[in-house]
Length: 255
Image (cartoon, rainbow, N blue to C red; front, side):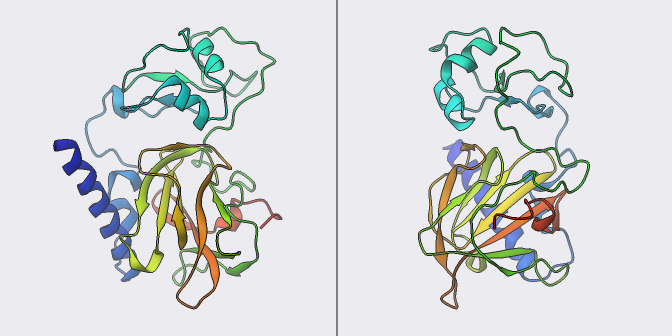
């Protein structure tokens, strides 16, 4: 029962945050929940220390197979990199390597048994250095019907066909999936790291749920139709709680 109330409370807080944004509130609505704030909301503990790129902190209900699937790997790779058997149980809070160590630029970590020639799995982008063209991938292939305009729009609108697949722009975890905010319709929000979040509104169907780990390019929803009858999705990017132009993060072509 306690877990049920926690999940309900999280959904209500997230919906309230978006409602404040739509009403033009001068506060930073995405920072009103822990998901969207770069500042610590509780004392630092092992469970709140950021996990470096290429690693994943286990959540309740996770398995090696499920984690491997979310990151586009096979269970044998995940198990081998972490010195585990494929059928070993994993515990909430445990940090696992989900990407092979790279030759340079990676965080120093204890050695693992992995071939240095193995290709790296997609990892969540690091947003601390600002917009990086091509870090995110297009969630939908279609024309940009509405561009980002600070103070007037919080993202872009991408046209498509009803039922077209909507894909995760980067590896991350779903922190909201629901229809509690009328202006966004069925909405998905994905947290990629401590400072970067993407949102996908106006879906006709949601194919992921809160808490799911998703890989870049994974289908998470389907294109819906807005109040004007236009098949499209609303796509937003938030860095450190602030709306930023998604086109600065997406490849210059491919939309």
